[in-house]
Structures are given as structure tokens and as C-alpha cells.
Image 1 (tube, rainbow, N blue to C red):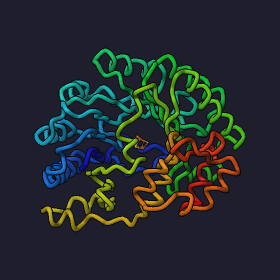
Image 2: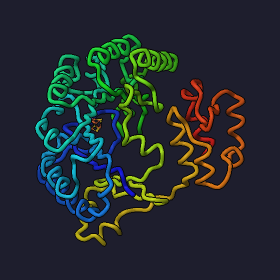
Image 3: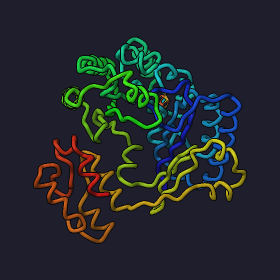
Image 4: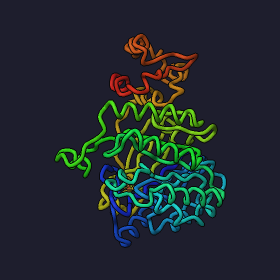
Length: 369
Ligand code: SF4
């Protein structure tokens, strides 16, 4: 039973220097072709929409898609959108209000805004527009005035030109804005990005590891003090506002992904669409579309553990036993070593990362692979 639907919109107004997501700046003609293919995918999958609880339109910047209205109209013909519990759309501060009337009309009740940083010096390098406090405040207040109070801000730490002081100011702004959810990611240097090029050519530098640790600790402590409970390594929410859609990924629930490079998990199978817009534009029948999707090899045991340990609650030992017919600690004897080293702990039925383990999660995850 599929309860979660993801739709990918791969278009942005410009390309940020650190970003390696599936996205591009495209002409209206290309966007029209993309819409047509998405509408076909929606039609081919319509029988899977009966039990949906969440929808997430991500990107890219979905609100820079000039055919967003047509996409929502199509979804509305197959899905009772009023019955969707959590309907999220990703956006940027500059584009967040472009489709305000559609949010209400189609029951989009959660807005995720990619801010990354409020610091003008950092933003200058990132080439982000309208990321200043006043602009974002206007967006947040307008959304709230229009009945949308479930708002996430995406931020990044360890960015070029960022300091502990700028993180402190960013968190003061979060406090002022009083949003329900914050995602705070550690910067990842991806290959083939402008950021990687600039670093390799010594045009910029990053905060030192020591500075990064101070930033991370400050973020964790301060957000907690402000009432944002950390429920996943990079995600913090006011009580009751944890993202249901994102939790479905970490707890191995089934979800369907539509659009370029969108991934799906249905039962024990994982599959994904091509990441080539040219190839995506080609399918003309359900058979061609299904033939194009690639099956992804996966080890559900490993995924259950790694994804589950990303959450603060951790993984249920009982559910593991029911699913995989053995004890987790028997299948993975090294877990006991991590418990002895203080990176993992058992609390009742749950195995989870300790406070120290949350900061060193990659060491634990890599051992499962
Ligand atoms: S707006 Fe978001 S998806 Fe688009 S390039 Fe920037 S970070 Fe990437």
C-alpha cells in the first residue's frame, strides 16, 4: 500500500555553486515537454493513489515550474487532495509566494523554503536572492496570514565565509520567524560543482573542522533550547511537526517517485527513473515507461539499520526480528563494540545513536555496508 508520493521538478532559476541535485535552468518549451511526460506518469500510476497520506513536490525549485498549476490540476483529478495529511512543496524565498493561491486551492499545507544562510556575505558567494531577514520574514508572515503555518527552513552550516557568529545570527532569525521545522545540513562538497572547483583552485576556503564542530554543537543546543526537537540527524521540529513524508523514507515505508531521477520503494523493490531529460522525454506508453525504469539493488536489512539509526528514536529490535527472523545483535556483532565505545545505546526496544554517536554516525553507518 503506497502512502507517500514524491514528484520531482528539475528546474531552477539559477544553479547554486554547491548543488548537485537533478536540476537545470530550462526554456518554457522544455518545461512543457516535462509536464507532458509527468502527466503520462501520473496517468500510468493512478491506481497507486488510493491510500496516499503525503505528497512532496521537490526539486529543483518546483515554484519556478511554469506549469505547476497544470500539474496540480492533474493530481486533483486522480487524488482527493483534501484528504492528504501532509502536502509539501519546496521553494526559495524569492519564489515562495508566486503560487500562493494554488497552495490553498490544492491543500498544500507545508512549505519548505531553501534559505541556506541569512548572512549577506555567505549569500553573495552562493548567489542566493531574497535570503535576507526582511524578505524571508515577509514570506513567512504572508504564508501564516494565508493559513499555512507549517513551514520548514532549510539551512546549511560550514559554508564558505560562514562563522560561528553568522550561525548565531541565523538562529536568532529562526527564533524571530517562529517556524515549525528546521533542516540544518552539514555542507557536502560534491564533485563537478562550482564550489569544488573554487576550493580546488584555492579561490575560497571553508571553516576549519574545529569551527564546524562548534557550529554544529551550537545549532543542536540552541535549537533544542528554542523547542525544536532533533528527530533525525539534520532535522528539528516543534512538537507534532516532524515531517511525516520524510519519516517514511527513514522507516522503510513504501513510496512512489515520479519525475526525472525520482526513486521509489514498493515492497522489497526499489526502482528509479532516468536522470537524462532527453531519455525521460521519450516514453510514449506505459510499457516503454516501465521498461525505462531501473531496478536498484538493495539490502533491506542494511537500509533498515542505516536509515533507522539516522532518526533519534533509532531502530526497533523487535521489528527487526519480525522482518528478518533473527536478532540484530546476532546479525551484526560489531554493534556491541559500538555500544561499548559509547556510539550506540539500547533504550527499551530501540537501538539508537548516542549524543556522541549522532556526530560520528558515518563511522557506524559505514560498518553496516
Ligand atoms: S535552488 Fe536548490 S535545487 Fe536549485 S540549484 Fe539551488 S540548491 Fe540546487
